[in-house]
Image (tube, rainbow, N blue to C red):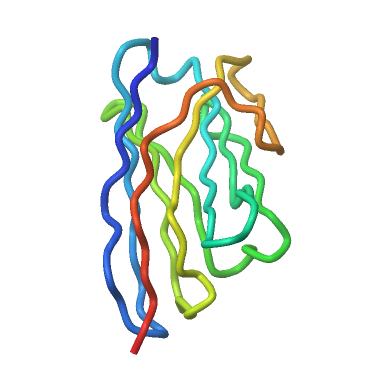
Length: 125
């Protein structure tokens, strides 16, 4: 069983940057593709980005390209989401998720196996 814990959320102003972290424990981290997602109040959960276990392959939702960057440090069992130029509409609970897969595999939808509990990001002036 893989356990995921997100951190780094908080209240920021429009235009600010924030880096979210997701720490994993329980299994060899490099065996898992990882993804970042968010869910705003009254809206469906959406995928933001994904990264393969090796870190060589990444995926971004079209609306996230250019502002968000996913990365991972397998030595630290952690995946990151760097978010720049934040907007009020980025306000949501942000989740990370994991799926066991081949080293260069990236899942591009919501069907991941393991999920964290989420971290709140609020963008407001």
